[in-house]
Structure formats: structure tokens, C-alpha cells
Image (tube, rainbow, N blue to C red):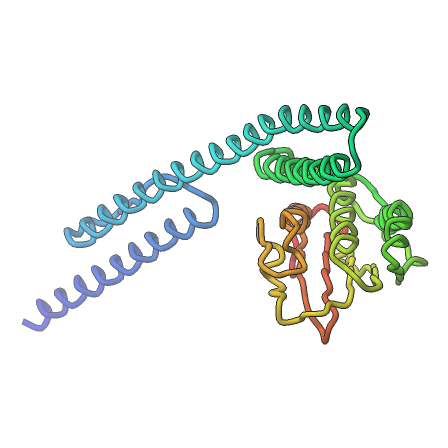
Length: 300
């Protein structure tokens, strides 16, 4: 009798061990799907009615989730292409309107008529700028090209853009303080994307700042950093994280902005293995971008 009970216990223990191994195998297959986008269904090597039913239902859910993700990707691509097409369609009439306005300025207009025409022309210019930014953002979202990596001096790019915008800052009575200009920031990255990041950061400061601007750049073993900061008047009106959201124009200071320039900064920074953040310390708003020094996956 004892040997029968012993045999039953051994069989049950063996079955439990086999079940545990099978559950572990199912878990490993699920983890593989998550980490490497493996699309094959979960498979069982042990026959168990309840476990088979569970895995069948799990595979059904995974198949529906896969279909849902595919549809979502297709809809996102359609949306991106639609934005690009709309941007292109708007360019032609805006260019035509601007051309006719320039022709009208050559006519004999009264002072009032000329003033009204100049106001209309400024609105068209703003619309044109918005469309250009809108088109650029849609292009960046839809284009599939990977960054083109090559040696590049980030400090030189920064100094070039500051020099190019010097007159415009001076006209607004803004002084640009540069910290770190004696340090060479050599990294292996995409120069075109870096130029767009720096240009948008400085253009944002030029457009929205009423006070002096501080540009600081430095480097460690993994990342290169650029920060652009300036004083702000109404601290409560700013939500730092929202400043990177597309079309965010909630606060008074950014009401006339498209809200896309900083979104492009974040998008490109992430494509180059880094990030972009905004912080407020006291009454100073600072945008800080970090970019990987080499073409590799960030470890921190």
C-alpha cells in the first residue's frame, strides 16, 4: 500500500514540476514578445486541459493586440502623411497672397491703406512661418532616415548661431552670456539635427525672452549638454513639461507661438540618444538638452 501511495506522490510531484516548467516557458515566451517583438503564438509542450484553454485565450488576446497595434501604426502614418500634404497645399495660396501684397505696396496707396496692408502682410508672414514649422515637424515624424553620424563640434555650432542672431538680440536689448566657450565639445552625432536643436533653442529665447539669456554648454564621458535660460515674469503661468507639447500655447508669453519648435528639440534630442527638459529655479526658466557623445544606447 505504501509503495502505491509513494508512486502516486512521485507522479503528482513530477506533474507539478512539469506544470511549473511549462508556466515558466510561457512566461519566457511572453517576455520574448515584449522585448524583441516576436509575433509567434505562445506554445505548450505539456497537455493540460485548463492550461491549454488559458494559453488559447492568451494567444487570442495577443493576436487582437497585434492587429490593434498594426492598425494604430497605419493610422499614425496616414495622419502624418495627411499633415504633410496639407502643409504643401497651404504653401501655394500663402505664397500667392504674399506676392499680391508686395505688388500692392508698389501702388499709390494712402497712409491708412498702406498701414492696413502692412498689418495684413505681417499676419501672412506669421502664417507662413507657422506652416514652415508645421511642415518640418510632420516631416520629422514621418521620415524614417536614421541619424547620419560623423565627428562634429557642438561648441562651434552654438557659437555660429549666437553670432548669427546677435543683431536680433541686440535690437531687443538682450545680452547673451555664453558659459563654456573655451571648452571643445567634440562628439559623434548628426550635425544637421544638432543645428536644428540649437537653432530652435536660441530662436525660442529670442522670441519669448524679455531679459538677458544665458547659454551654457559642457560635456561628460557620456553626454554633451546645452542649456539656455532666461528670467520670466509670471512664473505661475509656466508649466515646464507642457512647453514641449505640440501646439502648447496656454501661457501668455507663448500665445503667438506655434509650440512646435521645442517639440522638435525634444524629438531630435531623443533621436540622438538624449533628452530635453525644462526647469524653473526661482524666476529663471532653463531648457537643457543632452546628446550622446557616441552612437550607442544610453546607459543612464
